[in-house]
Length: 494
Length: 95
Image (cartoon, rainbow over the protein chains, first blue to last red):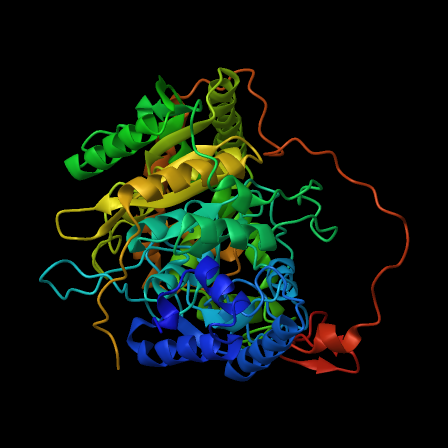
């Protein structure tokens, strides 16, 4: 029998259906892989008893012929999702010990579809980061290394643990969230597939909030088909989130084999940024060639406000974060550091509980919202956001079905290599992904090749609102042409 | 625009984050790096542009005016650092 952890989500589903193995065996195989991979620091909290109980129940349902879409399939959960009875910290010291009495809608949807929870996964603190180095649990180590070099690399962020866990075969799929690129950038760094759906496709209820007008949940998986399976289960209307769209969820998996014949794919000239590496340039050209050979028409398009998306994001996102994170006050949950009076208690609690990047963003947010600066910063950024969205609307109105770009400006970098002196150096990682959040659009990252040192590189497809189906169709064409990424050699086994 | 050390302390106060004298200079440097980066937004012509209020066109939904949840005192207090008689405990606020 092949190694159960090497299966894709779809293959594992089919194997369970044909009784080639049981959900308990599948779960135990992944638990074994997690036990060997402590050095990657991807899983921070395993739930072995819960996982086995869920797997036993899944086997019973399969035996009764009542399997649901993800019955018995073991997945990991980013620690940003609240899970009932299981500590949920957003990888922040301020939330250590917080054990929700409720389940996030997205994870609840997964369990209702039969999935098995292996445990909680590391991420950047409050999802603020592009390298998974801001976590209170320490950095995640990527399973990927440069050829002939054992420097420890970042898996990207903020969903770095999710990407590392899927890439290292510790779970069949993982949940993730994306506010400025936090699903797509780590997927690109680890040779996995990650989709951020349209704003409103997934409920945000029970997900620790970072920037509410930008946050969306989505999956990280081994293949495009697996991403379609996961997203269908995660999505759907939820009365508990007033921004969650009340519209039917299509059978995304049915779109996977649809092809791109007759589709018009836009290539935005503003993404050809100065100093772009020749490897990224070649990757992008290869992606265009693959889609053209599969019958798509490639057209150059213009998104003139692209360069303003990242600076506008670094006003809007911190502003929303400073409001959202005001709730961590040492009163209702999490850490509390006593003080002489209530204000000093707040200040000491927040000084001790938040990490450096989180404090920086809260302070920037407080500044741009403060009296005298609101119009110059926040209001202007929201107007620019209107212009960014309008750019996309005009391209789509001209008949473009999807847009192809590189997912990141480079391959993964070393732990500790970036952003220690200048935070903006780290922020530039999201230059190709952040526009998508600013406009509320769906975006998928699909592996497209490798750099000269053997590290994965990703392509990004951006779709029309609520047209994730086209992204799955075009993503599959890229996956077929580029070839499925073989897992990295297991060097971390304890 | 850039911030001086006094402004850094004022922002920290607004954000209810205690800062030490050692924190202030590097926070000032980092905040100014971010503010320098967003400076380029000043060159965009935003005359007559409406600020974005909703990224997807959606109407605010109405729901039935009915109690649908409640009686969860124990759940709500379960994670609090200090409670007494079904209340959150805080340091004395009124002298």
